Structure formats: C-alpha cells, structure tokens
Image (tube, one colour):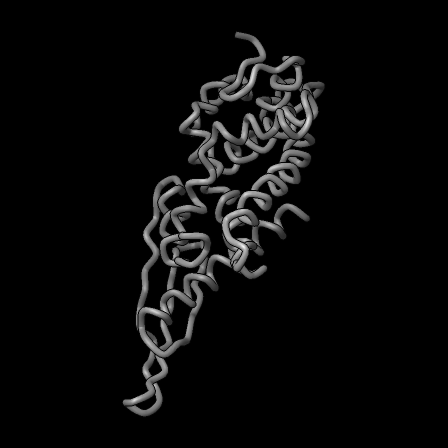
Length: 226
C-alpha cells in the first residue's frame, strides 16, 4: 500500500517517499528531495521519545545514566539493526545502478527520516507509532536501565554490520593487597578504547565500558552538529 510503513499508514504518502529517498539519488537526479531534512527533524523527535522512555524507567536514575541509556537506544548501530528488522533497505530509493550494500548510517538516517515524516504527517503520536514498531526499547532493557554498561556496549557492538566484540584487558593492579586499585581497558576496533579504574576488575571493566559508551554518544552528537 502506498504510504504504508510498519506502525503507520501515512496520510501524505509523499512524506514517506521523501523519507526513503537517499542522498545518492541526487547524483542522477539533482532535483530530487532526499531525506536529509527529515532526518534532521526525526533525530530531534526520536531523541525526545527515547528520553521520555528512559526517564520513565526509574525515578532513581541520574542524568549520566539517562544519557547513556538514551544514546544506546538511538545509536547508529541500534537504528540500523531496527531498520533491517523492519525491512527498510528494501524500501529505500537509491541512485540508479547502485549495487553496493547499504551502510549502517544510511539505514539509521532513514529511520530518523521516517520518524520525522510521521511527525509532520500526524504529530508526536504518529511518530510514536513508527517508533513502537522498531523495538528500540529492547536496547535500554538489555543494559538494565544503564546499570550494566558492559551489556549495553555488547548490544551496541553486536548491532554493527559486521558485528563486533568488545575486547577487555587488565592494564594494571596497584595499591596494597587489601585495597587494590584495578585499571581495565576496553577496545572496539576503529571506534576506539577507554579505560576505567575501580576496586575490582569487574567494576573497572564496567567503568571502561561506560566511558566508551559516553565517548561514542559524544561522537554521534558531534557528527550531528557538523
């Protein structure tokens, strides 16, 4: 059905068409409206919906934990995985003759663009209908309301294409034997690494994972601004 997307039938099918039109189409058709403006709007709308969700999880979550949980829910990896689950790659309008695999960023951008289109089509409730079809809340649940940063990083890394595996290593153990100070490092390929320090190796690894998640969230925000 024209104008149909998982979770919503669009009143204005042209909005959905624009949301699914990748920037590559402009190579052969410069006059085409691609999905970048809708992606910009959808990013903000999705951020609000995700923030509302993580805020409702617990009244005791601090701002930092809320930020990590939200960033994990709407990361490029999480959005691209959701896009593949609902089959967005089959709906995208691409440059004629394009044969290469659709990248994670293009899929994530399309998800945000569709949410932006839904917002214009029917307001916040319409955007929430599309959001509900994506299963993004599972990511916040996996990290146990941001209390399990290692689990959060694991899910984020597994959502990448191809999936990746965080690598943990013990950097040092200092201090007296009755009160040691552990430093651990986590690495995730080209996404970088981070270190954490705590009174046990397990806690140091969790701190390192939280640090890398925060860095990834900061990089994503920086990319949006640029």
